[in-house]
Image (cartoon, rainbow, N blue to C red; front, top):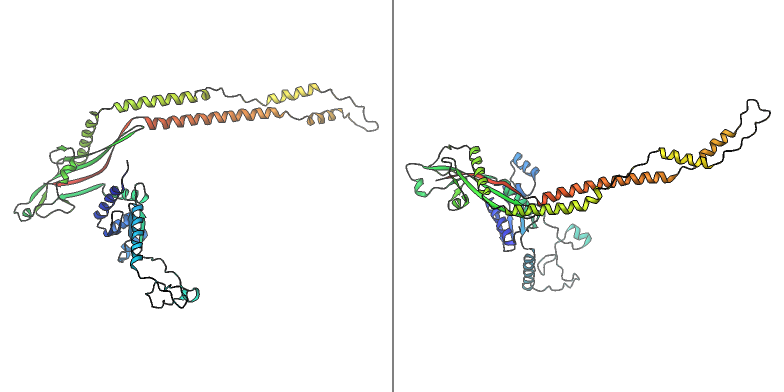
Length: 397
């Protein structure tokens, strides 16, 4: 689903006009608007400023924007306007005083105004305009952050409405008041999703007096003049059906309608899901069936050391030291020193580390398999999702 620049512009202008924003300039490619207080609060993210205004009662200064819907057309229009202005302006006459005709924005023949910066640095360019008079420029195209913000603000502000049908002029002068019938209208969005997606809007209305349900309720509302204000000489009837019961009745009605639809697309989506899962299981089958390598125990190191000792010839028995009392033969000490000098086999440590790394890799591969399987089910599994995107109370004659 996408929107053309014309559709984006129509949606944004509808939103701005609904919030009583002041349109200052408009073209097929852009619109310049001064926001209303309500729109400024929704779009500019200035809670501290509006908190200050509400606490002190100071006059509010809303911001102004130039929303560009077609950047290429807008840039071409700007270049054409600049070229036309350059042709209409008189040629610049060189200044004999050596300023190359630069007059710092002053009319021809009028000396430039002296400024503090100009006194030390010469002619300086004008500073950008700041403050409430500044007009910000933004590109509002499909997918832009500003358009997403407007979508969210419209969804939040229009989630629930309370409207009254406006009476004719003769009713205002009638002796007996006219009677309003309360209706609950809910707009449901139905999503049919698998690896493909389709959306439908169902606008249903139910009378809170008789319980009558009307499909395409928006068609009935389009022919009526609605306003949030209750007209004079009008009377609102008391509802006989509660809002909870009315909402449950609309959900039950929509569910019955959805059960009557053809769901062959869901069966085909399930077949595609089974095929994708079979391919995925076959791919990871060899990895998951591998036996985990056994990690050798430290006892193997001892056996290797004993083999080394068996290959060596025992040291010769040394004679006792003469003339030293309590002297002991040093043959045992020499043997211990020789045993300590024998290096431990490093191949055992390498095999152990290799086995541990193989276990870690196998667990990582198993986690990857489970993740991909979950993603595959989420993408291909057929599902129907129903969401209430807006609702309202409509008092109709």
